[in-house]
Structure formats: structure tokens, C-alpha cells
Length: 555
Image (cartoon, rainbow, N blue to C red):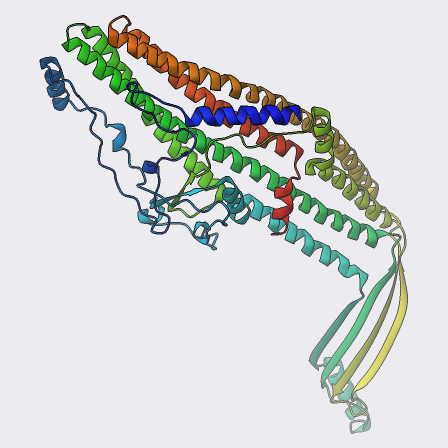
């Protein structure tokens, strides 16, 4: 309860701090909201039409009109300058999907896996669709290629099990052949009869004949000292292993999607913070130029402000590039169509709280992790395969029965004739040069290897749980500290501006306060998203959350 109460207090405090962030160009100018909107209106596109519109460059305000500023503007117009941050193509607007609605079908890829684009317009990004984290998880379950490979492996294991279970039934074979022959021995016999008797014997058949032979044969293994049951048990264990692999892959995909989604949120917030920093730097430049014109400022302060503005614009350009990269990484994990980009629709906030203590979490992970169960299944498979190999050195008892029909033309005593046979067969491999003993030893070593892997996986699971658990506590404390630091940085920047405008402060103080505010904003976002990442990693380390149960129904 103490952890839950602390989390609620910190979450509320962080949300209020983010919602109330005022990145001020002047004390009257309000900054952008950092939580209610993870993707700004300039970063979205309409999903129905999936189109984007280029934005016109926004002019940088310049209120000073002195000779120095005019000369600087003239010089800037003559020299090629780096593009303004607004020159970057951004989606114009977007309609987020209702978080309670499923992900739309137009985000599913083409059903043909072998299809690939051949024209540039087929890979052009024509729209950006904001989605929630739950919708991203749903898309991953539907479209993720690694999950589909695991599903195909399960179907393959089921087919192999059905093939092995066929040994429980007798095998029935039907063979039929039609043979025409012209026997040299028959011709020689006929000539001898004609030379000796002067005529052919009435019972002598012709030299040529046509024979039709059909046989129906059934075989069934009565007893093989457990070899058949061992093969079936090993195949069933392979199916269980494939099911556990799907469970493992589901948990891994959930972690990949969560981390990719939080990376987009981090990139979106970095863009907003960088834009606010550019606005701050522009206002600082305007203040420095105004003080220079009034005769109370220096040229050095103006140059420092220009350098700060250029640096902040460069940081914004990098933030925009990172935003695009983060979106494409999520699109790859979700396997959406080539022409669609994705954005985060959820606000930046603490994702939840972990109520179990460390010891309970470790025990729960030992009970739930599919990786541990897979090692035990591998050991069972090796044991069943040993049984099968050992049974091959013992007698094999089987029964058989057959019925056949024969019809021979050209034979006066021939005609359609049927026959039957049945019997019991025993087969025993007495000596194989030691191959069977070597196979048994190999499988025994595989069994021991599975046990060693189990111990290693068990230790690895504990390490993963402990790392995520400790990081979760640390990040929760960082959220509290970053919230306080952000409030102090806002107040510090406001005071630095007032001191500079009053002539008792320096431009260096303003720039330092600006940098402190930008760093504090980034630290708060990093702390919140770091907490969410640690929570996702802890859930992955424990596994088998309701997400898995819901998704399992789709397989």
C-alpha cells in the first residue's frame, strides 16, 4: 500500500508539472503542453486519405530595426543559410483512433509475403496514423513476422505429431501390375513338342501371355517395447515446446513494441522541448538586440544569443530526425504497410505500479517464464528419444495379412484366381557396431545439457527481475526529483530574464537558465519514460500477464 500511495502521489505531481510547464519567451508567453499532446498538430496526417501537406516556413520574428540588425539581415540574405526547422516536412493533421477501438484493417500489410515494392511511389510515406500502446500491441499480434514464424513452427510440430500418431494404426497397401511377356523358354518347349510329337500338346500354353496381379497387404506392429509410445511422447513434447516458444515470442514482442512506443514518445517530447528552446533562444536574441539598441546592452550579448539560437535549431533538427527514425522502427515491428507511418497517441504518463515485493516477484517469474519450461521440455524430449533408441535393440513383433488376385491370359487352365496369406513376424537387430549405444549416450548428454541450460536460465531470470525491479524504484524516485527540478528551473529562468531586462543580470545567466530548463524538461520526460521502460522490462521478466491470455485466443 505504501508503494501504491507513493506512486499515486508522484504520478499526480508529475502530471501537474508537465501540464503546467511554461517555457517562457517572456513572463507573459506560455510554452507548449508536454503531456496532453505527445504528437503536435504539426506532426500528424489524416489516416482516411493518408495524405500530407507541406508546411510553409515560419518566419523568425525580428522586432529590432536598427542599422546593425539590417546589415546582419542583408548579409544573411546573401549567404546560404541552413534551413529553418519549419522547412522539415511534417504531416499536417491527424485523427487519432479511439483508444477503445481496435486497430483499423488498413494498417495490416499485404497478405502476400513475397510482394515487394518496385516503384518509388509504393514506398513513399503518404500519411501518419497516431495509435495507442494497446492498439500497437494488437497490431503486433496480428502482423509481427516473428510471431507468424512461431505460429508456423507450431503448425509444423502439430503436423509432425499427427504423422507420428499414424503408427497407432495398421498400414494398408494396395499394389497392382499388368505384365505382358513373350518367353523364349516357352517357345523352345513348344518346338520340342512339335518335333517329338508332331503337334503341340493341348495343355501347352502360348509363348506369349498377359498377367494381371493385384495384392492388398496390411501390416501392424503389435509390440516394440515402448518405441512407438516414446516417439509419440517426444512429438507431443515438441508441440508443447512450440507453444511455449509462441508464449516467449509474445512476451518479447510486447517488450519490443512497448520500448519502441516509448521511444516515439521520447522523440516527440524532445521535439517539443527543442522547439520551446528555440523560442526561448529567439526571445533572448530579441531582448539582447533591444538592449543593444537602447545602449544598455553589448554586441557580445547579441552574439551569444545568436550562437545559442543556432545551437538550439541544430538540436531541433536532430530531434526531428530521431522522431522519424523512432516512428519507422515501430512501423517495422508492427509490420504496417510501406506507405503508412505511425505516431504515439498516448500522453506521457506513468504506466502503472508494481505492487509485489522483490521476493514474490522472483518466485512469480520462476513459475511463469516460458524459457524455464522449455528447458524442462527439452529434457523430456531427450528422455523419450532414449527410450525409442533403446527399444530398437529389442525384438519387434508385428502381424501381416494379404489377399491377391491373379488373372493370366493365353493359358487354358488360367483365369481369375484369388489367394490369401497371414502371419506373425519377429525382427531383432542383434548387432549394429555400437551405433545404438552411441546414440543413447548422445541423448543422455542432451538431457544433461538441458538441465544445465535450465540452471543458467533460472539465474538469468533472477538477474533480469532484480535489474528491472531496482531500476523501477530508481526511476520512480527520479520522477519526483525531476518534477521539483523542473519547477525550480522555470522560476530560475523567469528571474534571470527579469534581471537581464533590468540591467542587473547578464546574458550568460539567461542562457544558463535556459539550458537548465531544457535539461530539466528532458530529465522529467526521461524519468517518466525510464520508469515505463523498467516496468515493461519487469513485466517481461515475470511474463504471463493478461496480455498473453488475451492474445493466446487469437492463435
